Image (cartoon, rainbow, N blue to C red; front, side, top):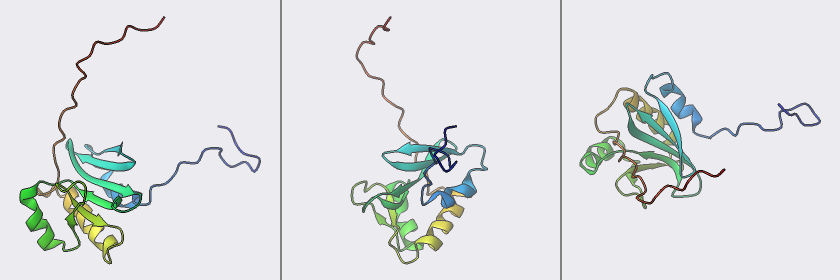
Length: 137
């Protein structure tokens, strides 16, 4: 590894500000963490559960993968949740919420327990219909 003049690594891994929230899920054998549109998406059992966003509003907080029929029950339990202004099929916990940390920890606990209200099965990726380009020599 290359180092700078002061012997620190030249490339340090940038830490996501919400990494501490998904760490309790990492020990699950089905845990997968993927980058998605500048955010970090957590999958368990192949389902997209949570998406941690660290951008500007409305992309600064936690998106909860859920279906519309579960919105009312989750919002009754978590009044801080609201439908995301762009992805209205998902609920959103903004980082600016007064109880963000406490609510996010409770949310991760529900995910770990496989609460049936949380998690969406992603659609299979569509293959492009075009012809493949021949390999370059």
